[in-house]
Image (tube, rainbow, N blue to C red; front, side):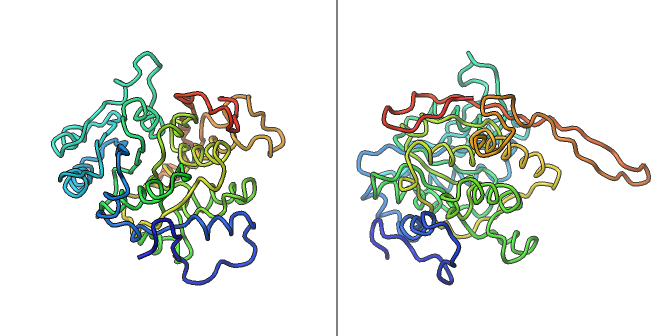
Length: 345
């Protein structure tokens, strides 16, 4: 077993030449594995830290109950719980997701019931932002609700760096995706949107973040007093937005990543991935606009609609216009006085 904060060797071979020096050094220093921290060690490290687990969910009745039950059984029961609350933010589900999650033992909060003084929002990022108005933890663990074969090690793995090292503010998960190996080939470390959109953007415009294996991973954990000081893109741009904003706010050395093992989840159609990619682009361009000629940081949303085309059997070509939500919620708290501050757009 590695020491409490000792980085793990997760590579099959040494890092190649060509990585930016900052990213190379960071990878070696801030990459861990979930195997480092078992439940007993996490209980020892937790002390008085309060932990909230958050699952944004929309029509995830097939998986959300098993995830909540697994967390409760392993990490909530007993005299020294690791997790103090499990919050499911239900995003207009129509398949009984809320009922199943509540029966499994989660606190279910309907997305529109949080901050009703604000215009209603939709999307994963909006659900995560609203969870911070409900969560009482010092640390929030964000988990996707569509994961199959979930293991509580996801939670303990994400918590480990935060509980073992007070300097670390935010942790991203990464994992092997067996379905991606089949569909995209053995070189696909992330999903299609990661490899075709997020990774090229980060490598070109924020090379310091090139060490993140899966920058769009939905599994992450952070200190709530830090998370409340950055804006949240309301849709699927939330992950890249958080990564860029937290890098600006606290610096690279306070970010970390953890190998969570294997992850299986529901896959989306190529058309849906196109809409996701548009949201990722939008969130990134808002933050990286000063590096792209012709994009005004305080201008209109870079993406509002997405035109897609499909061939209908026997009917020719059909154009489809999808509305792509690209709104953002502002920080819950003002940025710390000594942190880099970016205007909220």
